[in-house]
Length: 506
Image 1 (cartoon, one colour):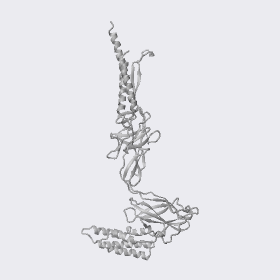
Image 2 (spheres, rainbow, N blue to C red; image 1 turned 90 degrees about the vertical axis):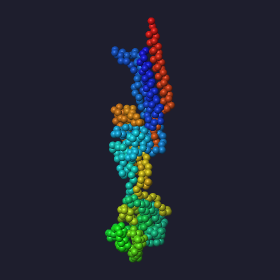
Image 3 (cartoon, rainbow, N blue to C red; image 1 turned 45 degrees about the vertical axis):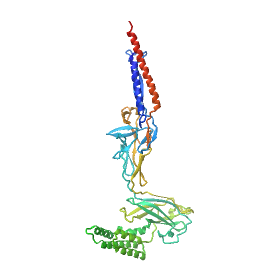
Image 4 (spheres, helix red, strand yellow; image 1 turned 135 degrees about the horizontal axis):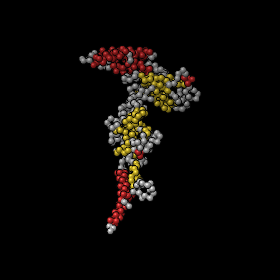
């Protein structure tokens, strides 16, 4: 017997206690993966090659093996906390170096990057301004907190049932202000190029069995009347007169604004009269427009905007249908009966008063799925594809890693996508501290992909992955390691006693 075996046993037991102590110390560390000390026996090399009767010279630590088992998922109140359920690591970058971690406790830095407590930036795929994920090489994820740009409405889809038993309206011609001149009205909010909301109303007028005319109004005014009232907005003479008024009103000393108002009222009145005449206005309707323009121009302190309001208030022209719906005997829309008209209908919805947007919203109005049955007239569904501007209210990562932003206008849009990395041999990763690992030749190259793809796990937002250390098991292991340490110490004590006996021989 020699001291070598006992000393190596003491060293091995001490190393085992070191590992156990580190596991216990990190029992509450998010994303921590426990380790296990693994041992191998030691034999001396035999010069003659016959080593079958060797007793061995002790033990050595073969490796400290990391245990990459799944930790428990625990909910948190931070939407930027993200847990991985399954295989994979978060890929982060710090000071140009790539690291890998299971700790998903992130926050936003002052530049909008998602970072952990050490400042390492989470990487993934960025998104375009329209929300398209730009797959390629992973880059640090930066959350765009800017406003969502407005989208002009280009399409309205309406599904409606028109009662086949409805009567032809008692009042003709159609008048958007007279409910007795139509059978049904539906409304939907649409948006101009600047995101301003306008109410588009559709009116359904039964003309005979199975046949209906469709009229449209913008902000409560039939579109032909609205277009006539808006004529001054694009009329060259009216624009010049409005500019002249602005010059007079802002000059020092102030100019003759009263004369400028009279000039503008005359130009605007003439433009609206011309548009109304082309739209088939009656002499009485034309006279009302002229009278309103003349009266407005002589009103003290009036502005061009107020003149436009007074002219628009009396402007009225005959309504014009935008299309018709014809149904067959089964209550379905008939392409043959509607020919040569086809769906969808094209509507040029005027924007008035002017908002600075495009003067008209061109909309495709479709009625697919609409019916004429012997049931109450009812709107089944109406959708449109525009929206106003919105600011970012909140965002969270989905199971697939897509970070979805929710905006004040009710829209949602991808802001980026988190990627995960996995390795053929995770035990080959080099621990760096701060819950991070680095790639080595032993681990193999990282296999980068999106969550749920292949063998990669899924993500859970507002949650963290706890340490996978089993505290009870570690305490039992600690007792076992202590007993091993004591036993090895006893072998040294016994060897010392044997040597003492030999020394005392006479």
